[in-house]
Length: 93
Image (cartoon, rainbow, N blue to C red; front, side, top):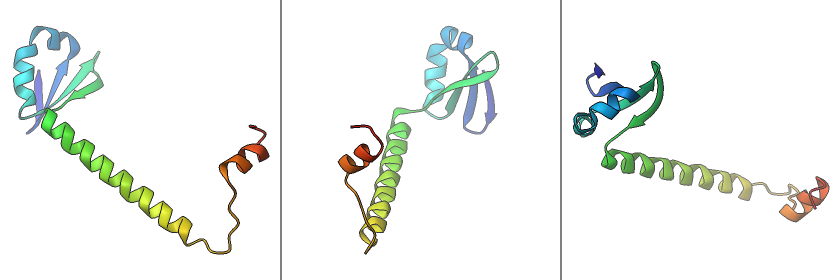
């Protein structure tokens, strides 16, 4: 187990098996990057931090979708087609 930055620890998968309780303790204050053969394969973060990241992602997705909807609503005079019509034109139906 190596701490590379103030709040980041790198742990090999083999080490994870041997030191799970120590690593779970580290997760409370650090991001833990899992490696296999010295290549990153995953990250373990505190559950509260994970929930915060999920909320941020959801908010960003909502913002982007709202922006796209607003752009579409402003397309006056542009011809729009339904999903069914698009599928027919592409030979999907």
